[in-house]
Image (cartoon, rainbow, N blue to C red; front, side, top):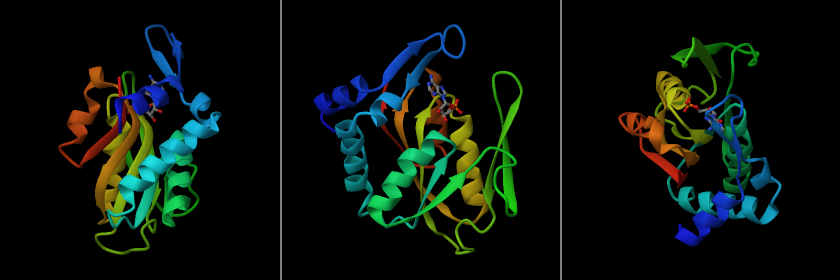
Length: 179
Ligand code: AMP
């Protein structure tokens, strides 16, 4: 993507200081979603990138990964798989826990998410990668279901936290914007 297009997208995302706590700059993507040109520009860009990668499924991480993942799935005529916070998915699930600054978190996927096919080609998508803990757990879930994570895609990468570098040991990583 051209530098000026990156700037256009980055400018469409609101940065909120000290939310949810002091020292965090929260990247608020609601302003991008509210801007129909910016939202379609992003989805078109991703559709062009992924149209020829033989993807079978797009897996989105709750909750902002659902927005981009579902929009892209519909555009590319692909199935969408939600990876959710614990207790939200009603059928049999696999769980993966990961460490947070304080404590632990867990995400889940339905065991039949990829229809029990082997080596399904999966694109993982979320809005942002920070420490990479959430995405790393999501890739592990995809692998545990015998699928391949072809790429993990993020709208924004926070480079200071180097989560993307760690994730790159497991899968290819693409971040549209880096800050
Ligand atoms: P992590 O597991 O540390 O990579 O955190 C990634 C998840 O936390 C993503 O689903 C993001 O939506 C959310 N997140 C982390 N940091 C921020 C931030 N500065 N602004 C907005 N969302 C964030």
